[in-house]
Image 1 (cartoon, rainbow, N blue to C red):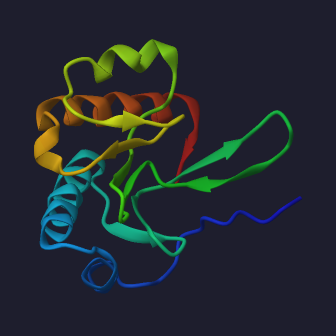
Image 2 (image 1 turned 180 degrees about the horizontal axis):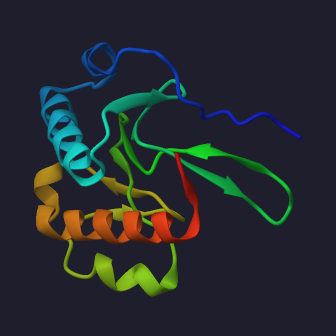
Image 3 (image 1 turned 90 degrees about the vertical axis):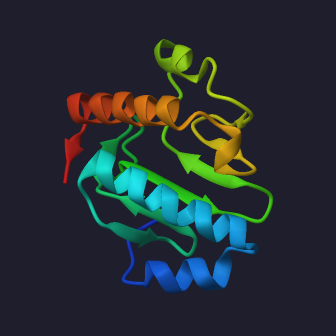
Length: 141
């Protein structure tokens, strides 16, 4: 079985933001996201892999037998956009994206250029619903 690439590390979150975020706006947005995700999870930010800031963790196991740990919520201040790991990707939760603002979506990742492009109240609601789902369906660590 392949080893998971994204595991929690001991790297310093603040040092990562200051070195990795390529603009003052991304730095500011990163610190705002830390506050929002910390409030939502009650967890301190930790680095996951080389570039994801995550909060809390849960254990998953797929039918294929692949298993591992992942952050409950997270983000990365990537060059092209902020990558937000706050969405389950489930059709039943798609309504939570309605009216959230200007973003693009991957399978379970939401990409925003800057936080002011999205409604933070709707983002909080999305995070809360994702957390509820994870707590009901996975082993929270």
